Amino acid sequence: MSARHHPPQAPPRAARATFPARALLLLLVVGLTAGCTGGPPTLPAGTALSADATAPAATPPTGAGPAADTTTPPAGAAPAPAASRPAAGAVPAPPPYWVNPDGKAARAVAAHLAAGRTAEAGLLRRIASRPVAEWIGPDRPEAETRALTEAATRAGREALLVLYDIPHRDCGQHSAGGAADPATYRAWVDAVARGIGARRATVVLEPDAVMHVVDGCTEEQHHGERYELLKAAVLRLKRQPATMVYLDAGNAGWAGPAELRGPLREAGIAEADGFAVNVSNFQTTAASTAYGRRLSALVGGKPFVIDTSRNGNGPYAEGDPAQTWCNPPGRALGAPPTRDTGDPLVAAYLWIKRPGESDGECRGGPRAGQWFDAYALELARNAR
Image 1 (tube, helix red, strand yellow):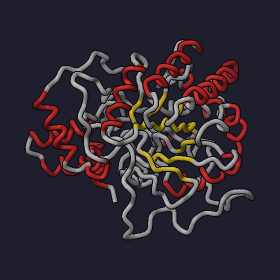
Image 2 (cartoon, rainbow, N blue to C red):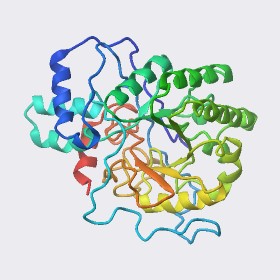
Image 3 (cartoon, rainbow, N blue to C red):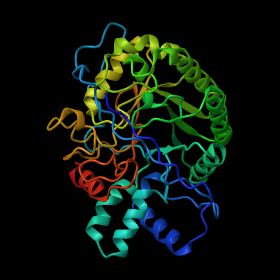
Image 4 (cartoon, one colour):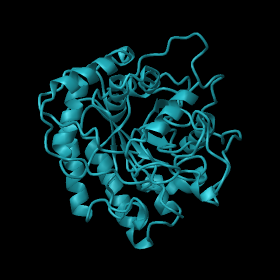
């Protein structure tokens, strides 16, 4: 199967120089609409916050993947609540996560405003004003993570981070890469943990890493190493007093929950806070919730988070099935990030994939992880 993710583009690691005009404009742009997240923080002068680090592309379901599971959960699963979303008219709790005032969406808003395109700027504020995950790069993990978590703490918010550097990543496909060996990976995770310190952070750990063992994409000789590294990463991150860790567990269109029970246990789910579903994919929140609830019943009732960044219109079902994951048309932003999900097992809706970043060079898009303005505008325009 073709790649499920594209690797983060390596951002420049040198600290950015201070640029008052641009910074003030970006802070104004985000500040206009970021009230629900506490607004942008005061950033340390000259600190690079890796706004150029990019999330991977969408995860296409495999051809043999099951349809979304909406059947009754097995015995032992908590009963589904009457509603999986807050009641109409209810005021949702503000998301506790930090909004990066120098993110790509904020830069795009500033560019549109500077060109007098106020309508476009207004649409993109739907992205720029909301917290999205920061994908930690391979080069300066401790400094990068410290800058992000310190900025979040100053704003009274929590950092949302993704770790995506496992050896043999993406089994040599489009997102091939990752740490050179187990020792390098352990050192990288340790550096990230030191960067977090005692500050609040939610970490989504290694998208696809377990699923690529389950579907056989990762060579069998690496399976034991993969599980050992994932469990070691969970244990290391959980030594930080205010860090939540969620192991990636695929999506509702990839594999059945029963296939993940053993692999997730070997990867350290018992020590983790829970698992993450639908990362970089388009499965609906309803399908993702049903999938997560069945999986939760198999792993001790663990809670889970759902990536709702681009699932507002569900998955794309037309055209070449092998390309439905890559910048599919007609998609929409999903439910905004929140912990107020209405379901005790759903810990949060998160924007783990960063809306507006390209899945790859398809359907007019630039390289994976680069800002795709037309697509970002479409996602925002289609949002309900």
